[in-house]
Length: 199
Length: 199
DNA sequence: CCTACCGATCGGTAGG
DNA sequence: CCTACCGATCGGTAGG
Image: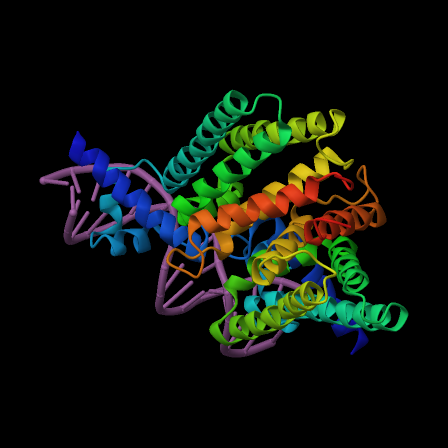
């Protein structure tokens, strides 16, 4: 049981790296198998289909984003209640951290969900919409209480999430900037983007 | 001659839409042919390979970005010489317009260049780097003359271009916002992102 | 986890 | 632009 789970996880980790490098459609089951030094057909003792492997990666990563936002949102509300600026900083930092903790998974989540079947794709789209809704609502609230300048909350939330997800493309572990410094920068950029013109 | 060129262009336009929807690896030559109501093999009278079609789309789009930036940069320097704020606004607007003028081509340019062969991929990477360099240099200059607040020019330029390229994912022609309004918003968001804290 | 194999489809060529 | 066809590879199954 444990062995099967870890074997399955090993398959998913290899698939994540190959999906990131070559895309889902550009990766064959045999390539995944070769990276694990087994025959292609042997993978089917552990997974039901290629798409199920993609789903496992995407679903787990979506859950990580959701949980990180839950924790960050709750903590911000507890420590700085009713302060949209702090709440947004917490959400941005949480998102950036999930990306940098596993760039591969984040990259597959951002780019390859389109390759899922119709039901799974629809399910992910729903969750993405709900997740983006947190940002959008927070921006709208922040504007109405004068914490943020006036902007279109839909555009601003999309731009913020696009910029955060872009981390999955350009962040390299062990590079010039640590995950924490990158999160700092993202918080700063987003903060100024939403700032009131006059302070 | 003219017929061959327009036929080739028709192939590229259909390929652009399919590459955008299903990715390069997820699109077969026969699907492109079917959308044109011809047999798969018939395409090879007009194009040398599937990758050559991708290249035509990516190369043309890269050139459109470069030329738009050239024009916008020259005009800004002429009308508002030595004013980084205006120059950045012009670059942002130019980029946004290229995306919204052909979202399909922009989307393929942003996401599918990885599927190019090694030399072509390297060539596009070079041009992307040079293009991003304009933004990075402009930001660094703006900081040094006090027009922009202090930020990391490398991160800021990457975040700005990521946000602008994200337009290719979420912009829909005929949607709630016109291309001009979207460009206005992007200019505003980027402007505040780079603004001095105190005005 | 293996060998052997399935039908389907891939990008592309030959020859007209 | 067509038919006919190429070898290679695809995701996946059977049976052990």
